[in-house]
Length: 428
Image (cartoon, rainbow, N blue to C red):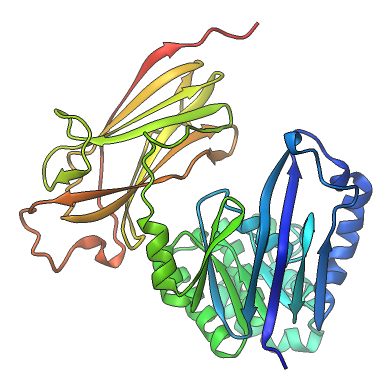
């Protein structure tokens, strides 16, 4: 008897841009809403066949989120799925969780799936925490007796006993995710699917969740874990799938796949411009303030990051930088505040971060540059990585201990300056 619990064959998903499209018409939306609970309740072997209802959407008006994805997952495996923003990770999980259907390809699943893809997945905002526990259990196919048996354990894990009879619409995002994870993990699904939602919780709760997922896996069940927290992926997972632009780039052991993923150097000055939401992220250069860009920085010396971008329309926007160790531990997060202003006219801009007070020890680092656009919620429009080296010696660093070895942040207050290089004429 095969131990394969998830088999994905030549899976593709195409979304229509700027139009509802025939595959997302009202009739199909209503059909999907009605049928989704029955898909979740169905045990044994479940299949999703995507052949396109009326053929594929026109290429010039569509986006291929997944492109020919194939892999297998065995019972009891803990599989991490990594990749940059927009790589297709969340789309893949939505298909595996029966939330959406593929355009082409097939997914075969053996067993009951519990999914936690976003805060409050499957919760009704008007119902209390107590009522939502029973609702989620029913959706997962549990009997009332089975839910009652796990009820106290769920409440204790989520730490929401004082608010159990309060409508969840009044919960904070942290309370939401604690209860949602507790329900999904404790009602004994054969397959547990978890997206990046654990980032909402505090460090102590994240540690508790990782421990619970390890316990689930040791019980012979299967876990799919999507996260940008690569140290957690490395510690928890037995196998990693690297997604890149809708395709499976690599599958293998965590050390190998994560190492290759982080080690891939991307120089924004040499790559194609990244365009989204009316913005074009053109270049990012790491340099000494008095010299041109270099592949390595001198430890303890002044340094800066200069980012150039253009806006195709007037936007409230700002730049954010994230610095990580080569193992993926984030140590610095700095950004322009955009919620209170920074409405910039269409044109070309240059933002310079003076990071001289960020004293990095010798070693390899990753710089992530994002251009944020504020249209109500906050949107990141790019997530490229650039690898850089710090050489020499740093006073006070003995080579064995550094604050971010345990995931701590370095305090940073950079000097930020934005200059308008060119104004664009409005389109008449």
